[in-house]
Length: 266
Ligand SMILES: Nc1ncnc2c1ncn2[C@@H]1O[C@H](COP(=O)(O)OP(=O)(O)OP(=O)(O)O)[C@@H](O)[C@H]1O
Ligand SMILES: [Mg+2]
Image (cartoon, rainbow, N blue to C red):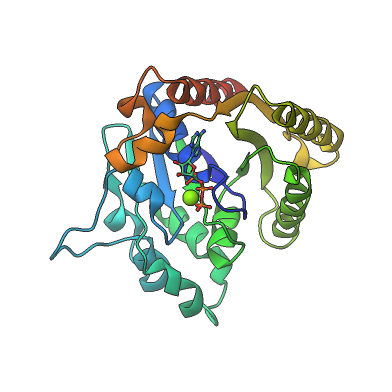
């Protein structure tokens, strides 16, 4: 199993869009995928069409992290290839409730170890913050993917992110690798987008191989273009591959999935 956290502390860069649609594209290619929604905003949960119904006991990641509920009791099937550990707004309070809990950065990791998962890919959609939720995600996975929006401070933001990853590697998870950076909301016609892409690529080439953490560092070749269908799909509760299967957005996430699949053969 490959386990990947989709992380960037900056908001609105394409984390959730990438998590949900990469999951769907990997599933279309025949892989089984489990998505964990680590964000109290529950956007990935909603994007998969999962909503809390009146009178329903909505079990979510909160129960796993705070109440110790087994992951199997919370996991839902989206279709025959994709399953989801949903989030709920109550996850906001998890952070506070976990203060003082021993090894609170490792709760998710330990719950996943208990679960003995049998899927090919585990994707975690992180919130736009560096609190205990994101740290739990980074401690539980082997790889991080960073969605980046091409703007002129992108490189500075990336540098800060990599420092965070370094701290997690030193203190909590020696296995963790930067899997790659993916440019999202890409406007091919603009000079800025091309310049940022070149800068990020050079930066990653320079650090690649410096040590294990950066051994796989690269910019994915796929550029996820700005595409209105990607912004519309969440309100229909399905990934882009179902909502607009022939759109640029669907093509781009299929192409990203292919790059990911080609890396290891998993
Ligand atoms: N390639 C794209 N083209 C057009 N719209 C996009 C694209 N990618 C994402 N969006 C839209 O941009 C907004 C932010 O994207 P998304 O929710 O994926 O970002 P995020 O990093 O998960 O945000 P947050 O930090 O709040 O969790 C959403 O409305 C989404 O539909
Ligand atoms: Mg999000």
